[in-house]
Length: 111
Length: 118
Image (tube, rainbow over all chains, first blue to last red):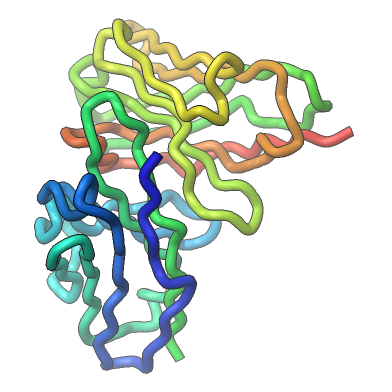
């Protein structure tokens, strides 16, 4: 089963930009343009922030953007705000019958 | 408004059983795949299971295969997760989510807590 790797934590000050990486392999992140990102505030419902690497669902701020290079995808948050402090998870499509695999999650702290 | 509301969680002993429910509203439930996921205390999100829009296809994580059963009642706009032979490591908040293509889950509920302890 695939394992997608994220840093355990990142931090930044209000107004700054940060990036969270999502590292996979040539059979998952590197193979498809189907990486998604989720924001999760403790005690609340997870929220889809990006899909297909770069697409924002309706209502998601354009401060959130995505990219991919090789086997690594990234979520960038610009103009950090206190409300962005949350856990962020990536997920990559592998195959139609494969389990959905989330990365281990990254805790974003806004200093 | 698209909404998912989970219920049915509780405190159980190891080996016990429970049925979780997820009431859907605000969208054409019978047109979407649906998923269950969970988050154990101090851990990340873990995908548990999915079901196609008419219930004919189901998939499970290895960790729950043979113990959990996902099902749906499209007439009641409700998703279920039957959890049997519970283990301490099944302790988690369980979430239901609406599925899009490629396994993307675009709407999530707030979750229901399952605690397995002797």
